[in-house]
Amino acid sequence: MHSVEYQNIKYLALENESVLETLLRNQIEVSYSCQSGICQSCILRMSEGEIPSESQKGLSTTHKEEKTILACVCKPINDVKIEQTSAPRKIINAKVIFKELAAENIVILKIKPEENFQYKPGQFIHLINNNFSRCYSLASHPTFSNELELHIRIAPNGLMSNWIFNDLKINDTIKIAGPHGYCYYSNENKNQNILLIAVGTGLAPLKGILKDTFFNNHQKEIHLIHGAIKTSGLYLLEELFDISALNKNFIFHPCALNNDDNHKLVHNTSIEKYIEEKFPDLSNWTVFICGNESFVKETEQQVFLQGANLNNIYSDAFVDRNQFKK
Amino acid sequence: MENIFKQIGEDAAVDAAVTIFYRKILKDNRIKHFFTDIDMKIQIGKQKAFLTMLFGGPNQYTGKDLRSGHAHLVKRGLNDEHFNAVVEHLSTTLSELKVPERIIEQIIGTASAARGDVLGRT
Ligand code: FES
Picture 1 (spheres, rainbow over the protein chains, first blue to last red):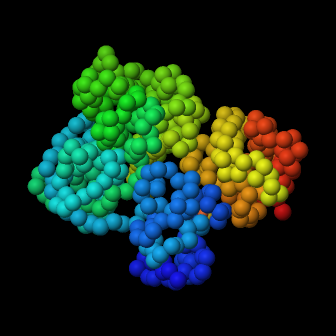
Picture 2: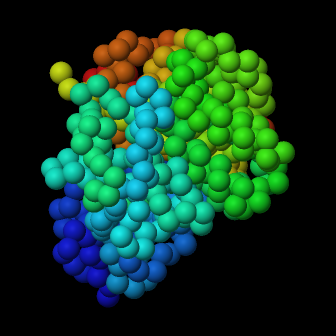
Picture 3: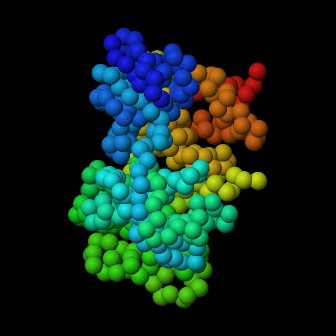
């Protein structure tokens, strides 16, 4: 018989029992619904142990790589360790190397972990400051740099972002944990055109993913749409134009609702309209979407309606904590 | 019922069906507002579980799930007209997938039986 470890306690799995059944039998609260491996509401992560292939049926490639399983159809083959997909990872120290204001309210921060830190470009980490922590996506690529690049929007009343902006100095040490997330490039996407869509600092993970498409020598088209309210919010405009000049299969599409700088190459339109006009048929595309929650939800539906296959839509939504405060 | 699921091609058929079905729903002005502010992937997982149940595949989805899952929508005005619209899309989806008429009737019959639970009737 095998054991199932969850939150530091080991439970014995009965003969032919699924991980979900073992947990429920021991009165552990986990979410589930269909109990047949279809609805994906029982998703958990198997951090240790051999993953039975049927327990990953229907999951995306990146979910599989991150060792997620459907607990209701997962019958352990050996002793396993199970955790929530968002369970905290090991905390390590990182040193602040670079900090610069990239736009009115966006700081680019580069930090160097003090020990080996592995991640996929596009994943996110937790920054931790004493009693609070926030998630930020990685714009860097581990092969090209051992520094982690983060784009931080200074939120009005944002505890972490204002602390970073006002107090954090070069050479300070900061705590990080991670990585997390499933929004990254994988070999599965090799034969498809890629469309990256970001608003605001949603650009950070997509910059990481963009580098990864180059690193993997992606042969098909790669398009990046970056949207902001004002042109001044398109904080990597020059850099991205430079990159697209060097890579013939990469095209950059900046969009601003208010082209305040009258920049010739910025499209004065909403992302929604732009996608509808320029990318009417997305059936052979892999689409990555990052930004605030409502933008991500709407855009996911839009690209799905324009033909994108569900399994080819990757997204990461930033939750604005302040909007929940009364 | 078990064999409808087998006959129409098991999981692959459910995947194909859910994609077509959900696109129809999101395009329908009568009902799309019930779906626009939710997480699409989670929603599609539930639709899949529901369709699998309708097709008689392995499932534990129950009337209770349907009831509690729709209670907040009933508060927002979910009614027979909306339910009918969804059933209509299900039926055309199955026709498009060339599911035999006789089987479609059977599936729609099962789906219609969920009306009371979905609309929170006693
Ligand atoms: S409970 Fe539905 S997939 Fe496990």
